[in-house]
Image 1 (cartoon, rainbow, N blue to C red):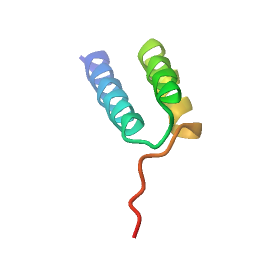
Image 2 (spheres, helix red, strand yellow):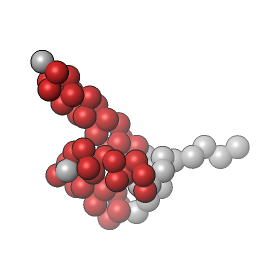
Image 3 (cartoon, rainbow, N blue to C red):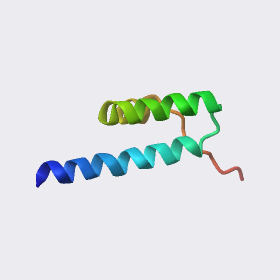
Length: 61
């Protein structure tokens, strides 16, 4: 049961990361590479993206 909850948490975090990547101002090539990293290595890819990945689109005031 605990592993199922952990898997669900990883899935939710990965979806959040992918949505953030798609909304970022990075080039299409970089977006594809980040998404592939997260899909292939869900936990490690998410951690790497969280530490050094593209930031979401920022609102300008």
